[in-house]
Amino acid sequence: MAHAAEAQAPVVTALHRAAPETKLVALVVFVVAVALVPHGAVLPYAADLVLVLALAVWARAGVGFLAQRLVVEIPFVLFVLLLPFVTGGPEVDVLGVGLSEDGLRTGFGIVCKATLAVLATGVLAATTTAPEIVSGLERLRVPKTITAVAGFAIRYVQVVLEEMRRLQQARVARGDDPRWLWQARTVTRTAGTVAVRCFERGERVHGAMLARGYTGRMPETGLAVAAPPLAWACALAFALPAVVLTSTSALT
Image (cartoon, rainbow, N blue to C red; front, side):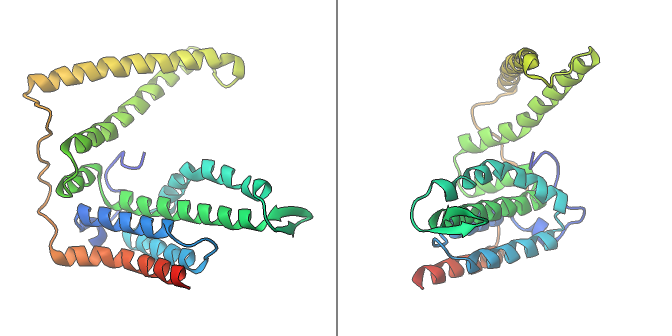
């Protein structure tokens, strides 16, 4: 998971020390600018990629870490592969196969936008811990309920994954090797066991929180003071080139 541990980079840079709320806003502005790149444009994607890779180098984000995050866009890529075959309009011959020009352009845009968004969130994950992100959301006046749910989700997704790993090890230790279709029943039973354990764990945790005075509002994290104007200016300067490139492409 992206925020399973502390920041992934081996050193602390200025990007790590930046206020989390400024990085969150810059990320949202950048992703929106990338999403609004006009159909058929190419230059904005190339420039945005250079910008993200430069930040990744600055943050010392590992290539393997960013590559792992790109796995989440595989379903989008599989969908994109069908577009040139199912989209109408003029066709272009590629290795003897007629492919829709509009489908190729649309697919190219989807892949570029998804890849840039994933890489940008990867840089954020490499330089910002989960408590810092939750703290940044609080400073951005995100409702307390949402930040509390996000904090619990980040923590307990890891708990569930660890529980599944232990159950998998227990099955293998008993001679089970659930790799074939006829063994799907075992996998289903494991998933049901995990679901029941998660429900019971949630009840126990909620009871423990109530016993400690929980009233529906999480305590303040108190990680750092609010970001100064200069920090906001530096963070938004990262997203500004993407906004300018998108706007220029839309006007031409």
